[in-house]
Image (spheres, chains in turn green, brown):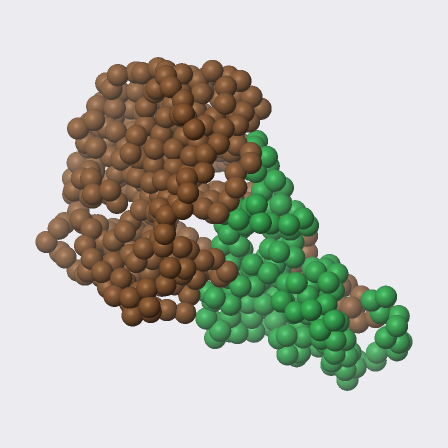
Amino acid sequence: MTDDAHRFTGMYDGCRQRVWAYVVSRAGRQVADEVVSETFAIAWRRLDDVPEPALPWLLGVARNVLRDNIRAETRREALNAELRAWTEGDVADQVTERLGVLRALAELPEDDREVLLLIAWQGLSPKDAARVVGCSSAAFRVRLHRARKRLKQAMEPAGQSRTRVRNLSEEWS
Amino acid sequence: MNPIDELRAARPAHLGDTPVDERTRAAELSYAMSRPRSARQKRRTVRPVWGFSLVGAAAAATAVAVVVSGTGGTTPRAPDAAPATVASSTPKVRLSARDILLTAAAKAARQPAGTGAYWHTATVQRTLYAVEGADYLVMDRQRNERWTPSATRGDLWSSTKPLGARPATAADEEAWKQAGSPAEIPVKPRPMTLSTSPRKMSTGHSPLTDGDKVFWLGRNVTTKDLRGLPSDPAKLKAWLLRSYERNSTESSSDPTPADTWLFSVSAGLITDMPVTPQVRGAAFRMLAALDAVDVIENVTDAEGRQGTAVAIEERTKGSGVMENRLIFDQATGRGLAYENVVVKPAGLQSTFEPGTVWYSQAVLEAGWTDSKPSF
């Protein structure tokens, strides 16, 4: 394989499911394949511009593709269906705490959810996540802090919270 | 547990790092890699091109009118600046689709078999873009030339000349003028910007990948591989499918990703790869055996040349439909152009009218030469 094709398929294999998961968490499963497809088509076209590691760049492109091509109400409806699927779950799969977290997550404003999932599910550093959403690292940390706080609040009434309170300095240090 | 850790632990299984299924992977990779590369790209390494559809796009400066028949087929007719209209007076020629392809196969197989030091191709690719923040379309154009050495260890020479973007139709030109005739046009998807002026030709040469690989047919192939392809259509198909997807099951008559792929590979074999005339004939016969293909007569390509098109529809992600078509000269079986036509808009093509050619590649020259370029 050529260098370019080799690099591209490697990048695809390494990142595709993460990009897909991100899009699903923003817009549901219905449009996810389409957005992922376009994202990688853009990555191929601009392969020389893609940095290493590629994931934050790809997520940023997916975010733009979503914003520019998927109508807001289509996205909201599909996302609501997706969030319901997360929180209703399988009977066999009903681990209470897990569902509690997901329900809390579903209640959050969209921006909070995005920020939290870039860190928790995509495994990005706050710096890389800041690049995806297009803000400074400092601004991102503030948003993350607030989002965590709201997530915690949303989790508490649903059940007994066993998480101990942490100081800010313990987090993301 | 900190809420981020709890969140991490609560990730639904289907959003985890499970591998993507093979069919989706093949379809998405081929979708991405069949698109033109950025004109701004500085090519440092040689990438064998994936057949014809990959090299780039030809140009379809104009929308074509289509007839959507009861069976869902489309009948593009000659380029027309008017938006898609129902023109039922130009019915699709369906009767002898297979015969037309078999005739083309015979003509193609009878062309002289050339040889030379270099396989030379010159193409113009055109890609349609929706302008960001405005309501008109522009066509970006680029001329590519390539000299592929027949000797292993030779260098591949290439040149790229961006010809500039221009409004797609007369109506688009009007809208562009109203917008102040910008020379730099932002297009979707952001942050891409196109320039209306031609730019300097970039040229270069570099060793072949692995010393001898010249094209990609699902895997990298050498000139020798291409010359040795079977001239029996069934064997050719089997060879290509092996290379495409090792685990693939026999495909049905539906346009599967494998059929679509076979179609674009055949287009490459017919149009711009250095295969023998007999293999070109076999590629036409392979196309004739695909139930999913249609033949459309009296089609004009982006360079204004008249030909016959063989076409296959492809369902795109997001329930759009696109028509891929190869336009060829019926008298010689020579490939003229490869085009993608919007049938049912979706995704990045959602702003294009049905019938719009949004990506095309016209072949100006494809043949053997003994001389390499002088740049």
